[in-house]
Image (cartoon, rainbow over all chains, first blue to last red):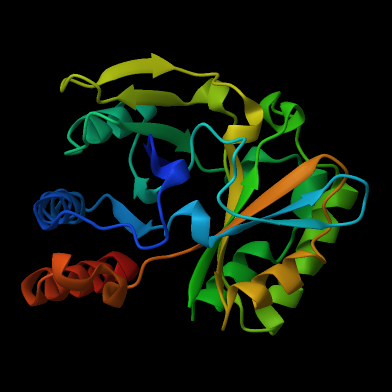
Length: 138
Length: 138
């Protein structure tokens, strides 16, 4: 089963575009990342620039409306993620517990949808999606 | 540049409602457009937070809470990883995404090694590159 470990750093919703990282924390995270990789559970990982550098597109009335970040209405935003392959939700939680996260950080565990989670009709409509993804990665 | 396009959750996605065959087909066509434009790296949907968990690291020892979580507008329902020359390019293509009223996406730039500056020492950078290469292989 694939799971996302979503890193939610409280306060990141109002971080400036040139947010500074602590080298010691980066090193600690790298050791954790290495541990995930050595265990063969790591699929991929990324860190995200603050929302103050991003944008949102809302499809309220059919017509897309673009808003620049930061987003005043947000209490929590994503700071980064890991995608892991594990046997169960419990195993995903056990890995998240080992994360060298700070006091202000929350890690959310979410299972990734697989094609087999959808109805047969939807699977037929989406035929070729997996091939499309594999092709995109090349 | 790489971007994460976060599909924000709605009360509908949080209720576990699966997209209809028509919606799935429309999204498939849009994904194909992204692949043909050489922009798509990955795209995934997540199971609702009712099946997820959160680990809060306040106070050191992580406290585990089972989902669901609120408000839906702060939650993630799915995402794309997109390659593009600029944020403006991502916004332009995402305006054409087949979303319906009430749906919202958030576009966030992904950190590259260069963005970390001095926090990422040459040793850490080499470690990061090795890790990424090995994770991609598995």
